[in-house]
Length: 204
Image (cartoon, rainbow, N blue to C red; front, side):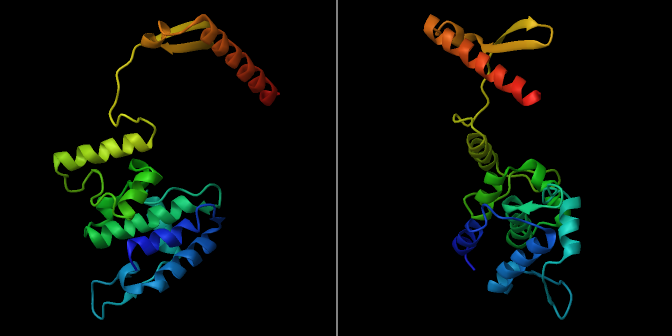
């Protein structure tokens, strides 16, 4: 099964939510479509294929290779991180100890990029082989852009804080204050008033 085929299959589950038993059923279905490339394989003769089971799911969660469920519910992110962990084991020959912490250190978008080969090597994790500096920097740039920082790098900024009360503070970027017009300031004030009123209603 190619990565494109896997992408197409997983795309059908973007809105999926289910129990652990249903998660295992989905994974089994994907495994059976291409057992050689999707299933783990025993290192000892007769080198049997090792399909997913409940114990593995629990182990992946305990090792933070998959996120914890929300209550007893699993979703698309669990599928992505499961296959990212399996892919790291099969493609990069990493041990599961080296992949520990995967779900904390990567967002879903970055895990997808790795899984679908847009990123060939996992971004640095503790205990994993170091990446070449240029590859590491590229992964950082891509991940920051995915998280909303379009420049792909951290930006320095100075904040001005208006402490309206001891428990209500408003922060503004210093370099943006000079660019504000009185009309724009009025819009910000009105937007804050509306948001505060909505929060008050929600809190009651």
